[in-house]
Length: 388
Image (cartoon, rainbow, N blue to C red; front, side):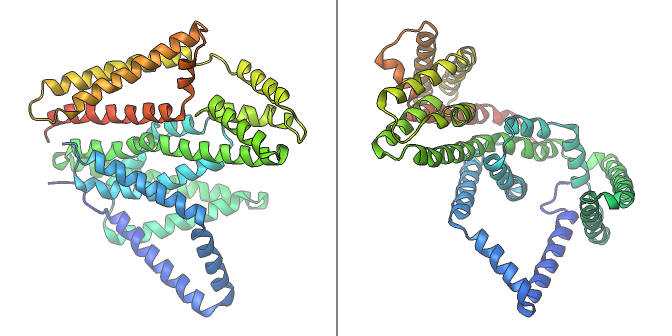
């Protein structure tokens, strides 16, 4: 018997109350002018071109990963619901916050939060739910209490109410946790632990999978803001385009470098600046950011090389798998060797035209997707050993 059903009673309850709320909003929109205007403004913001492209890219990325992971033996389509809910409720906000957040540790903090004990508690409470009648009462009650608590925190005069609401929320939370834990213990013999483990790991796995996408959004946003500001400081198209190319080559995929350039170097550009002065700016920037990642790059390159060897020889010894990945594995080995060569040359301060290949945006993306491919192939090679 599978305990993890397609929709839990809490999810059904949330869906019912959401539909009721939407029907009420539609009713108000047809009968009250101010609500109609607010609804129209909200829909206009949602239909915004940039937001629409953002959502399309996010969903396309999710579909691509679902397609890739669906080939693994541990995949079951019952997990699709959890993946889609994560994308809607967490994935999209995660990517959006990556764009607007000014916190330098946003990505590392996100990973740390996904590994906290609170995640396990949330999983237990969310998996072992009550019957539908109780959930239909619990969902609106807890929502109301959280809304009142949020409002009470905004004003000092509501401090007594804030303490009372905090006590009520904590009490209800402890009761729900106790009952959910008891339910888990009572249904011990019916549990499919492999299935539960996979379901529990979906949020953590999806957070890691979404890191490249959210980082790409943040990177694009920071570059766009930097180049718009540069347009005012450097109106000459020829000089500006040349400066943009040099900024991309020097900053690459580093948000810290982009932020450093925006903060300390962008103000040095002005309308009548000449080429030699621009060269001096970039020379100073290069000297300030030089050689901080040689050890990290060498370690990741060695791991990349070892993983690609594992893929190639793993496929050679497997008659039930396609042999095409062997060739790709050797190609990835070559990429790792090239990168190691670049790092060694940089550490020895040997300068030649080949070293400029390190700054190629194409090469960086090749490295990223090669890493993703290696992870998928390792999972594909050894996932068949999991039988449940």
